[in-house]
Length: 584
Image (cartoon, rainbow, N blue to C red; front, top):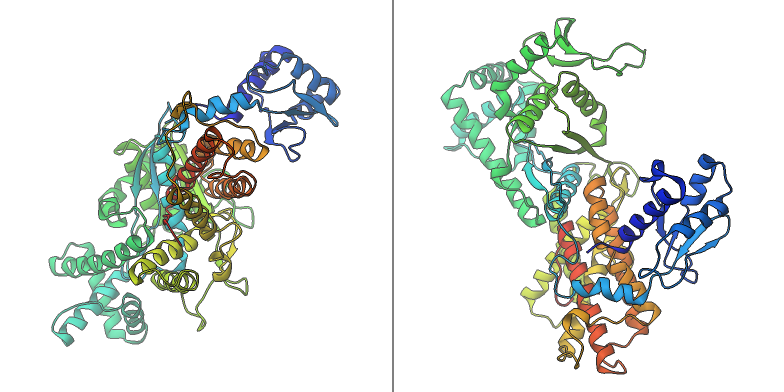
């Protein structure tokens, strides 16, 4: 099943081709939901965009398009031309009934899997070993998780990659500190990752002997010393335990099997540099081996270097990123690689991508995409901090989200059993935390606001979750009766009232929304759709009695619409990584 927009787009393109020739076969019809539904359901301003190219008046172009447009069986009347050249279309109720019928028993709600699936590597989360996850990891983790879920649902093969930061000179400092903790406490262990890291750094900066031992420990680690590697694994295991707790609480689909840490590429780094040299792109600048990707300049207009090997022989993030990309293309056979990384890394990734293409490591057909995102801000519109000015731990945000949600649930439904209230609070609190992030255009910064994100009205997760429970309460009050004679499950929806039309049209837009998110990698588009769907449902509920409908056929039809709406909200929230509850 295709959504109405797709069907109309196909017919518009055929009309454009018939009216103006093959050159316009791929022209975007520019279809949008009509602002004033008095004149139709959808509107196209393609005539105005084409008028200048064709050297004609927009209304004349619009009239020509309408003349060739096959509107029968889709629209209820001849499309009208309004204003300077807008084309208004009103969908036929019988067409809507026909499009909705297959959805009644369809678990995919009309979303077909792509016929040209990609193998997509999604690189997201990427915390550092021996440091707790903080608010800065929130966006990468939940945006990446949502993108992976949507691409799987769309039919792609998705390979999640958690690029842990587990290598570098700082590990000499950390391992040496861990060894000394063990000497003093009869067993090396880490109680608090943040405190552990801060204590190690403090000692490194203030104790020259400790700093010397730490530097030697780096050499031992890089040389494969067994004792040093054992302590290194202790740090990794403790860090993974913490990461997994956060992922589990957030409902993020990352496991240890998705980890591909920086250290896993160590043996590839010399080969990366050697191959860059063979390709003729490696140059030495001030003793360092660099690549100068074309088009990148420093503030003075000089070619900008991307260092891949320092003068002391050490490697950098760029070297590891190049090795990781080669692994993903050559061994994972990725056709699309998605990096969910802070927008401040845009220049770095652009240089990595340019290098991969310049030396031919990114073969034709491999898409390299940076899913950039902005910063989480506090009420002062500065990067979000604790009241004391420290970094906000992600686990603390999770705990506070659940605590605040529990207080709200207790005020609304105090009679629920205690454990049930806690379960609901978990779903609502985590949903609110994630949705507040995902509903914003990811490239923009946003202000963290507990009151707004936990509100039960407006574009929030609690509003959508409440909409779901409100629909489910209808079925608890009165299960749907057997369909009347002559009305089967595949033909039970009959669109008559304006609010039914608006809800039906919105339900049919889901396939187009999923395709849009899969292409743009912008989760806020799905959030906007779900909010609009819930709003359309509430208008329908207010004006179209369901259980007290005037006849059995209408009651059955409206119950089917309710069921479709509940399942669409639940599926949409699931793709965002958010759950639903039966009551709130």
